[in-house]
Image (cartoon, rainbow, N blue to C red):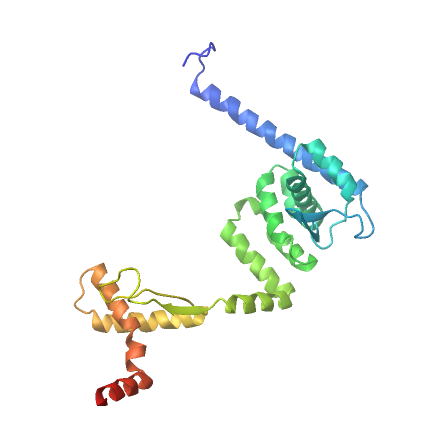
Amino acid sequence: MDLGTRPRTTAALLSELRAGVLERDALVVREWAGIVEWAGEHVVATPEGAATITDGFLDTGVPIAGDGAPLVSEFALMELVAVLGRSPDGGRAYVGRVIECAWRLPTVYAAVMAGRLTPWRAERIADLTHALNADAAGFVDRQLVHASGVGWAQLDRLIAEAILRFDPERAEAERATAADQRYVEVGDPDTHGNTHGIVHLSGVLDAADGRDLDVAIARRARLLGTSATTLRSMCAARSRSASWPGRTSPSIWRVRRAAKRS
């Protein structure tokens, strides 16, 4: 397509694009520094009048940054968000993430200012630490000296470790909530037009119970599937093995004997 421009080499074009990316990142870093300076000048002493996170039309009452970060004026924040050209909800969340980094994650913030960490990655980290108490957030920050090389799965594990170490009550509450999600469900063979005598089995177990069940099924499948030569036949052997506890249960045999006598 002829756009009336002089042809350039691919190398020159890529170089220009890269320069634009670096310039854009530098502008974002300058914006962060300005937001932090603004926040320092608009601190309020009490929660009344402080900016909080909103969920649609609902005011959650949760400050835009975590425990230990300054409370900033709601009225002044609306003016800042307008200047930044962001939506009210998105703008307050964005400013909250910057404040979270500057006050609660100084290592992460310093990496952004030095150009070692992209702002969007720092924002993601701030999202994950917002609900942590001050000690837990500080622990996470100290582990992120080389934040640019930390993957999201590793960061999730770090957050979980921080909660276990510094907020055991929350850790126990989350464990209890997760335990409430456990279930085992065996499908009905008469539904969905099933005419082959099979059912769907699904469930959520404790990690230890799930591991023990997997080992038991694998051991039984090896006994049943010693002649299996394909992945499909081994999967079928595992399926038959999963029914073994029910077939060997004393209560099941009592029901079967009673059925035969009748």
